[in-house]
Every structure is written in structure tokens, then in C-alpha cells.
Amino acid sequence: MNDNRLKEKQIEIHISGVSIHSKEDAVNTAFKNIRTQVSNEIKGIILSIRPTSVKVVDLQIKEYTQRFLFLFMPKKKQKVKIDLKVTVDVQVLDI
Image 1 (cartoon, rainbow, N blue to C red):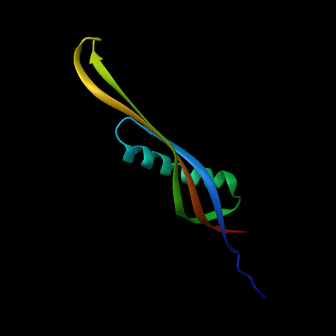
Image 2 (cartoon, rainbow, N blue to C red):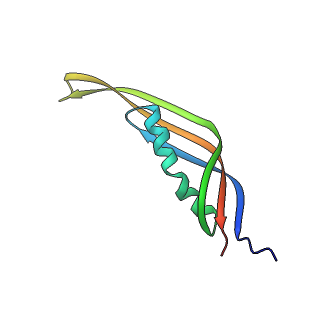
Image 3 (cartoon, one colour):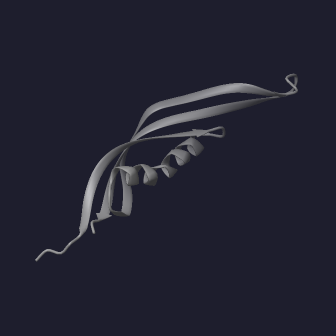
């Protein structure tokens, strides 16, 4: 009698992240959303999530100049938006 309730699934999800600091921060923001996205697609108790493949779908970097009172102290700023397609292996406890 096989009483193993642990199931392994592989799914593909799309996540995105936005940052005003760097590309790395935008990727970190995107990866924070993986668990939420996986829990929306899979029913059951999620034990582990392991990314196996990451593909960059879209990367946008917008640079702009920020000024104090529209005239003084110009600063170069950037806004980074990244869209990723991630394949993850998920271990689910099916109860």
C-alpha cells in the first residue's frame, strides 16, 4: 500500500518586478512574488519551490533627471522593470 502524499509538479509562471535602484533589486522584487503566484495555481500545502529555469521576457530601463524645485541639484535616476518566465519544481503535500 503506497501512502505517499508528497507530489512533485513542474509549472511555468510569469512574474515581474519594478525598482528605482538597480536590476538586481528588480529581480529580487520579482522573486518575492513566486510563492504567491504558485499558491494561486496549485492547491494543497506547498512544501518547497525550486526554480529550474529563468528567462527574461522583457527588460525596461528608463533614465530620468530629478531636480529640486524643477531647477536645482539635478540627479540621474532610473526605473527598472523586468518580466520573467520561471519554471519551478514544486513539492506539494496532498491531504
